[in-house]
Length: 119
Length: 101
Length: 170
Image (tube, rainbow over all chains, first blue to last red):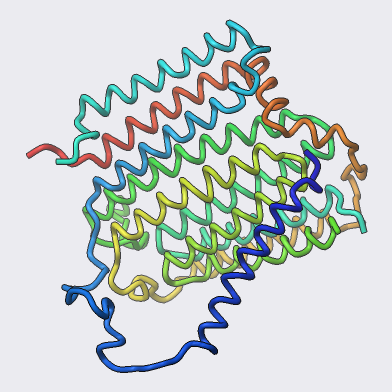
């Protein structure tokens, strides 16, 4: 693909950025403004909040995220393989099979370790 | 003016230098990791620029592998940072001096 | 057209890279780094590496930066400023050395335009070889063994992350 084929992508970026910018500026100038302690509350019509948002997350979230990244990369490797699937034939199938077996060992490990369970 | 290999190399050198400055001057270990990512990416940019201007696709395959290595490195590196933070309650690399004496 | 886009992307990427290393709050650093990575994807598209541009956005700007954000939010220092103390001598020296290094590289490259650097504009074929099909053909014929080793690397990363981050059962 030539870079010219990406002009629509560029236009999309321009439209998205322009819309976000215009929306931000326009609401600043057009919207009615009313300030009061209740208006400034985080949840104006909702529940009262407890504490602030700067509490610490559990490390379990990190574990889920890092496992996502690793298996995301596995799928990224499968994409050029899938595009060439017919020309590669049995050899390609075998190489991808070995690759998947290697990564399944990782999946089994974390399963046995209990990394997939939440508590 | 036509953009040539020279321009990409200069740009990558500048971005790499910004990354080096970040690694050498910051004390927040997370920002140091991010600067390392920046350096890795500017190296990738030179590889792809050479691959494009020398008509050799091997550079792009290499970048593909380097991205895999970067993802693995970030996964392990951040896990180490989390472990360090559990012990020291801080992200300051100046506090990591247990091996000093 | 190509030149204008290159100049624009270069300016944005340099600006956001400087912002990455100068922000006090790591969250801003992360967001500027995402912007830098998008600029890199733009360069990759201009260099015909369209598949790598997609991977750049998918893996770097997507997955890796999410990982960084997770860690920042997990550690959540209440006062990001208190971390930065006074710059020590070695930090200043490091900055000087690094900037000197950058000037050296620039001086080398800018001696005379294109000195020692091949100056030639590739044709149409340079934009074909960066696609998923051409890249995959090379990856699964010539580079099959590195590909399997990449699998082992990912396995090691999974095991390492689980071993490091998993709390021991009590």
